[in-house]
Length: 342
Image 1 (tube, helix red, strand yellow):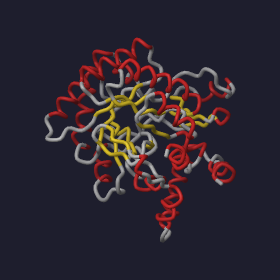
Image 2: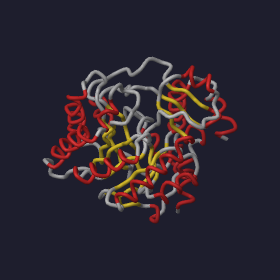
Image 3: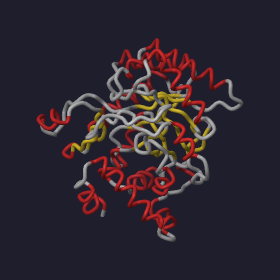
Image 4: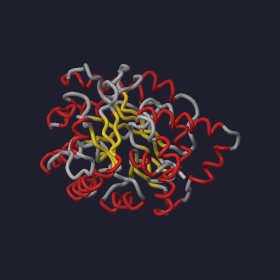
């Protein structure tokens, strides 16, 4: 029903407005008495064989919702009804920021892809902390994806990451350090070996000061060379963080079916969706081989079918995450992946 009726309807609206409209309708639907139980009965696949023990945490299943969908913690209680084993919130920054001017989210329908240049728009970490207080869906693992404000210079970036880390620590199960978004000027410079090592060491030092340290992951870009990926392997090992999320969006535009004139009109931004599938899988496979399985890998990028999820897991991912695939496949994506995996 989604692909033949609802998707064409939602695609009549600009992508960002469609996102908010979809969530408003979903909230209304789940507000009907008994609807929550019906959704879970239809879409939640619960099997002991699907459980994963990763980073000392018990995930009900290996499929999560990637950061970016729920930046501010407004929807994670709703999205849990689709059967996710974990949901990653953010990217969140210390202070609220509006992000880049609209329009900043674009569909590439021939490619089953999106281009975004959102620019870390979010309500700030304090608002997220407030929304995380209260009951949580049973068994749901929550991740906190943290970043820096746009006007914070890179030499002071660690202050922003540490601030978000401290404020979110009581409320999330793991952290993700985002230095790979292409939509904050200069942010990807923090992926260079020296500044990245220094940043992660400071976070790990703060983490180890707590009675029960929490897992820390690094989200990386798909545009890194093999040499840079080898640096990532070395950095993860030397800093002792738990692993990597591979990958964020790409700035590449090769092999797309969308017309060049359309791409030029859209302009800059990170590409996600089906065109990212092969590259993100290559990165996962490379990291798994070079690390010899010494750290955790969460695979994301182009997962729009059960087969795509299986491909990431076979390449070496411990868990997977979806986002753009939901837009094109629909809310049954998680359920269909889990039916195959079980």
